[in-house]
Length: 166
Image (cartoon, rainbow, N blue to C red; front, side, top):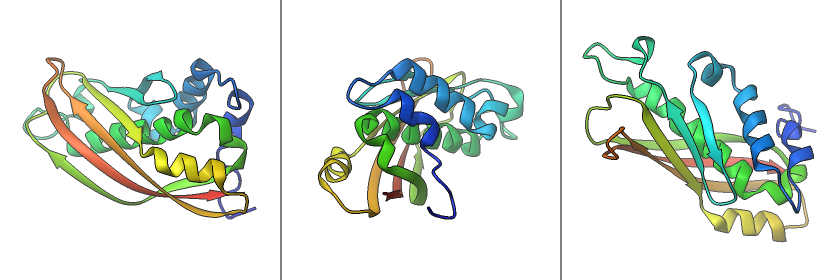
């Protein structure tokens, strides 16, 4: 076992061939202290994507009154990691950990109101996870799109994760 232990173990009972996405969402919402403290929640999760909400609260605002870039990143990353859980649900027993190696954020307009993040992972990584028999590292790419209450895109965040599989 690695330095990180088996960080995905809490998800395993709810994955497999018939995943319980509501339970996977519940586990995700209870695992990350920074998102819980800031009331950033996964509100929808399935085999194709995750959706998170970043609340419109003062402590997440910047000096000009919009949602701070750090809060947008936090919501996007939480959402992308949850999207991996949903997409890879059938193989969670093999996932030890996953961490961000690199990311690129593009903020396209001021973020005001409750922001919704929708994220998906590149399915090639999940296919490789399913096909690979030996343990090792796996690259996982994901993208989160951030929208304001009117549906306008306020940002996009691209993630390059590394995942340890057993």
